[in-house]
Length: 166
Figure 1 (spheres, one colour):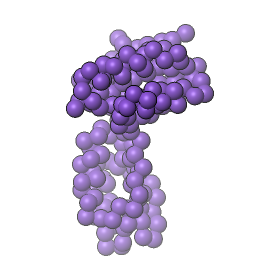
Figure 2: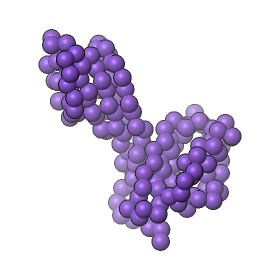
Figure 3: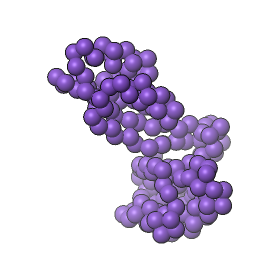
Figure 4: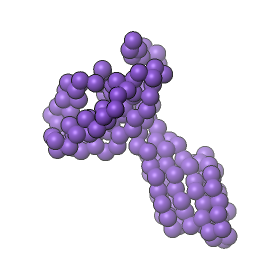
C-alpha cells in the first residue's frame, strides 16, 4: 500500500466536497484525511486529500477526481517538494503533580497550552505527522480525554508551480 497527497483546486460551490467524497465512496477508495478551505480567490477552494492504495488505484483516483465538473486542477503534492502540516488539539487529564511534566513535554515540541481547567488541559500542536505522532507517544502515560486532528494541509515549495485561476 502506498500513500499519496493530492491537491485539488475546485469551484467554491455548494456540494463540491460531497461529490468528491461520493466518488471515493462509490469506487471503494479510502480517504485517510481531507481538508478544505477557500483560496486567496474566494471563487475557488483548495482541497487536500490523503489517500492510500496500490499505484493503479492512486492513479485512478487522480484521473477520476480530475473528471468531476467543479474540479479545475488536480496534482500530487510530492513529499520532497512540498510542505505538509497538521493541527491537533489534545485534552489531557492533568493533576497538580502532573502539570509541570506535561508543560515540559509541551515546551519541547513547541506546542501551546490553550486552556487549563482544574483537572485538565488542552494542548495545540502544529507540525508534520511524525512530529504529532511522537508527541502523542510521549503522552501515553497520561489520560487523554479527547483528540481533534485536522488532517494534512499542504503546499508545494517555491513559486514555480503556483496555479492561478481567473
